[in-house]
Image (cartoon, rainbow, N blue to C red; front, side, top):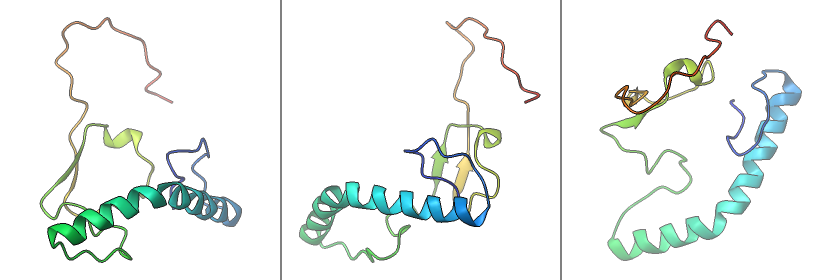
Length: 104
């Protein structure tokens, strides 16, 4: 399990790290509770049938696109088949070159 993006936890697979990540997700869940309540109210008014116990229930069934390169994501992230890395979105204009330690 990857660490929640809201924390600066390193990506580790030790039992302690996995437990820490689960606890971090619980904190995030508590913080998002008011927002989820608004989404649930809207879904009910709109007649949407959503299984709120399924964390991927509101993901697109067609495509989920991210502009980050795959190399910047955590190894072993369990993404669905419709998840696509498409980045970076960059046209090469208007930005100065910045050295980056790609070998790291």
